[in-house]
Each structure stands twice: as C-alpha cells, then as structure tokens.
Image (cartoon, rainbow, N blue to C red):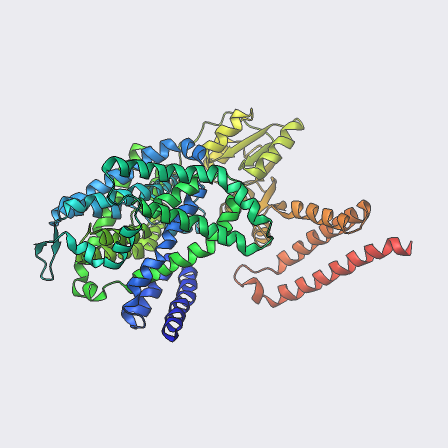
Length: 631
C-alpha cells in the first residue's frame, strides 16, 4: 500500500508541476506530460519497472478519447465533410504512409514493419496543433480549417489502423537481436510474453474455436448489438438512473458504457477503441451526449496524461545519447518527408499563401497517437522492441520540434507580402458614404441598419466564405483585406464620411484606425474594441467612437437581471443609463492615464483613479435607488 501511494504521489506531483509550466511556455499539455515522465523516469529514477504495467491501465484513456471523438461526430456532419476528409485527409495519410514506409524499407526493415512505421508516423499531433492554432487565433483561417480536417481524418483513421495492424503479424517472422542482426522469431514467443493476459482472454473469448464463418457472424453480431443498444437502450437506462437523483450514478453509467463495450469488443477479438468509437458515433445525436462528455472528460484527461507520462518515463535515453545525431536526423527526415507531402497536397488543393505554410508546417510532426500505435504494435508482435524504442524517440523528438515549426511559420509569413498571402481581391467598382471593414457578427448588424436606413455602404472582408454567404442573402460585399491601403483607397476612403472598423483581430483594427486617421484627419471613425485595453489603443490611434463588442449586450442583460430582482422597468432602465454614462466618462479619463509601456496593474495612478471612479458609480446608482423612496 505504501509503495502504491508513493508511486501515485510521484506521478501526480510530476503532472501538477510540469504540465502548467509547459502550458505557460506555449508547449502544450502533451509535451508537459512527456517532460514529467522523462524527469521522474530516466533523469531522476523515481519510477521503474511498474511503468510498463501502469501503461496498460493508462491506455484505457485512449479508448475514452476515441469514444469522446465519436460523440463529436454525427453521421450527418461526417457526410458533409466527406470531400476534405477523404480527399485532403485521406491523401495525406496515404502518401505520407507510403513515403515513410519507403524510407523504413531503405533502412533495412521488412515491408510489414515498414508499413507499420509509415502508418505510425503519418499521424500528426492533434493535441499540440489544435491548442497552438487556438492560442494563435489561426483556427478560423482557411489553413486552420484545412489542418483541422486532416487531424479529424487522422483521428478517425486510428480506428481502422488499430484493426489493421494485427494483420501484419504474419509479415514479421523475425526480430532484431541485441547486436542489431535479424533473427528468426518463434511464433509462440508472443503468447508467452503475454501469458497471463492471453490465457485469460482466451478463456473468455466468444470466438475461440469457432470456424471462420462463425467468427465473422459473432463479430458482426457484436457490432450490431452495440448499435442497437445505443439507439434503443440509452434513453430508458438514463431515465432509470435519473430516478435515483444521484449525480455519481451518471458518472458510473458513463464508465459502464465505455468499459462494457470495450470488453465486448475484446471478447470477439476486435479493438476496444473501435467499439468505443462506434458507440460514440451512435450516441452523437443523443440528448445525453453532453452529459456523457462532461462525465468522462476528467477520466479521459487524467488517463491520457498518465499514458503520456509513462511514455516519457519509458524513453530509452541511453539509446538517445548513444546515437543522438542519427536519431535527430531521423526526426528531421520525418518532418521533411511529411512537409513535402503536405506542401504538394496544399498546391494540389489550391491552398495558398500563409495558409499553405500553416498547413505544411503545422502537420509535419508525428503525434501522440504514434505512442499508442507503437505500444499496440509491440504488444501484437508487429514491431520489434528495439525498433519500437527508436520509433518512440523519433516521435517524441518531432513533437518537441513542433513549437519551432510554428515559429518558422511566423518568420516565413512575416516576410511574405500581404498580397501574396491572401487570395486575389475583388475589383471594387462602388463607393459610398460608409465603409465597413469586416462583416462578421458585429459588422453585419451595422451594415443592415445603415443600408435599411437608405445609405449606401461599401463592405470589405478578407474571408471568401463570409462574402459568399453575404451575397447569397442579397447583400453586396467585396473580397479584400481591409487593412491594405490600396483596398481602402479603391473603396473610396478619400470621399467617405464614416469608416466602421469591425475586424476580429485587435492589432489589425488598431493599425487600420491609425492609418485612416493619418490619411483622413476629418474622417469619422467608429471602431469595434475587444476589451477596455483595446479601447485605449483605439483612442490613441484616433477613433472617434469606440464600441466594446460585449458592452451593450452585457448592459441589457444586467437590466433584465435588475427587473427580475424587483426593480421597475423605469428603475432598471435608469440604472442602465447611469451606468452607461458613467462608464463612458470613466473610460475617457482612464485612457489619459493608461500607458502602453506599463502593465495596467502596476500603473498606480490608473489603479487609484479606477477605484475612485468605481466608488462614484456605486454612489450614483445608490442615489438613483433612493430617489423613488424619498419621493
């Protein structure tokens, strides 16, 4: 018991310390878990032989992850994305696998091992890439959406890959000895290595001893049973659980669904992950989907984190230090080969400019599923242990290089001209008194109001899909980057009376306001602000009217809250008016005290005045509340 608690404390402490540090450095949680495993394993030697046994337990986190991925993928959504999934994503997996398989064969591996290596390295890091895209605001770009499509295809492809890998066992009648030579392997060795588990599974197998057609029927029956249970049993079972009014019963049911389906798949000789994914897809349109997600997410996160820690702890650093030039060269070779394949696909699918480089560099690494597939391949006897250790190091090294790839992307795109990075702009053949830069959720409301009142607008946006959707509903807009001077001049900046800056990117909108004010000192500029600090930046850049994107909606919500707390409609509206007027004056005052070179929390004059203004607001609102009582 003491040993178990000691090991648990080590693993949890490593995760709690390393992962937040990695997240703060922008490296992502996966690299944090790997680093934690490396520190407590090879570096400090705090964990040892139990790591391998713990890894088998932690692999259940992968099963849960695939169940949750299935919950996110309704059959209809999958069908709508079929062109990018099977086209762009499918071609990436196929071409990368073949190219990497060729390199593995050139290194002297049998073709079956080479194919397993190619499939393993073809997959990219969903966890690292998606987190980085979100942090850098690249998720909604064309390149970001293409990256997401490929990652989604890869996540789905893990299922058939897991089912396919055991078929390669027949291609591996040999293993690599300690001196590097290839020796013939006895087929019974694999069973001996897993004697306990293997015998246990055989004793409970539903297909053991059946003829081939019987195995097929039982397997198909198990899959159909999972589908029918998901469709017809989920609702009554959840109602039964609901009658207990115990929150933990929902968690127990969610775990029971995943565990029982995984066990059924094992009984018929299929991958537990395959059954979990299938069940997730079946339940994706269920009203209990969000309940299942919230119940399983913590377990999935912890088990996956534990899995990555065990992978890091199991990395053979002696092997790395013994031949680090070769291993780093292999990692760079993998990134180069995948990058060439991705670049060719980007050209073929007409991904241009910055998006092409984002697509190429963002997906060039190997991913966390590589650890899963390597562990699974070794367990199935598909890849020799020594090759697997080298492969794990290569996967880990490519993931560690990933932040550098995104830095390289930023360096490349920074040198690119805006014209080369963006799609070709429309020829603007209209002018009007109002130019609206950006036609998202904010800009479209402004445009509808102004046009509905009888004034012409010139709408600019750099997103082709947004402009196309706008035209579909009868509103004219022009495709082009509103921050480019030539686009603005073509839209009639010299003669316009009002410029509405409604862009999503705060930095770009600030630059646009500064440029427009420099060119047209008399122009009235209305700008959308992300937050109060952005208000100050826009104020200094020269905007006349600044609208915080959530301010008015928040005021209305606050008024509704006051009305439902007992205030009359007039009292709530008056409180809203007082707050609005006071806040506008407060922002003007604080904008004069704000210094972009000093953090707001360390600007003593700013903090002191903000506190005083907040006290004034409370007094003003309290006075308004007392007026009806005195009257």
